[in-house]
Amino acid sequence: MVTVVEEWLCSYKRSKEAGLLVLINFIVQSCGCKGVVNRDMLESMENAEIIGALTKEFNEDSVNYPLSTPGPQLKRFKAGLCEFLRVLVRSCRNSYVYDEFLFPSLLALLTGLSDSQVRAFRHTSTLMAMKLMTELVDIAVAVSVQLQTTQRQFDVENGKKPHERASDRLEELSASIREVKHGGTQTSTRVAD
Image (cartoon, rainbow, N blue to C red; front, side, top):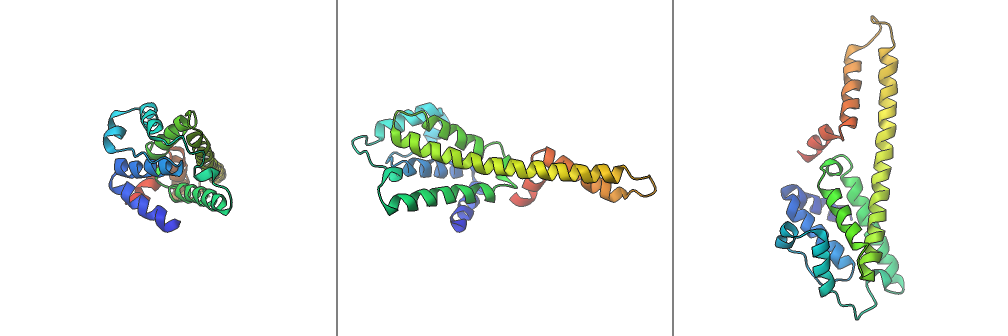
């Protein structure tokens, strides 16, 4: 799974739009839809229009879709899908979580799909959105704890008498606080390079 995510991240790094398109089509296929979102659709249509076009292509005669498949296939598919999302978010925790493109785009699409008249879209996208948000909340909690710890260290160092303070340590802690408060932009630059 890590290899799959790393390969996808390389394609996303080369072209955000092309990488997002691959991920969107993965989501669509995970719902059991044979429709495909192309670049023109992504550039010229709103999510609701894309979902409408996919709904027309969806084979509603079949009640089965990947998350409704009975037996061990369901468990493997669901576990694999959840693991993919977990690895994706964790691989992006110091970089693309902060790019204001990938995750807002994904969550907007998943939210739209969760309101679809097609049960497979609703069911699958709700699971995916829930897993993505759970992982993102875990990152937010970790960042909050890191910020509190760093702020406490800064306050302790800054509270020392002037001749006992380590000015380089204060600057280092101050830089860490700025980095965390501004969404990891310095970290994302280092990781993306």
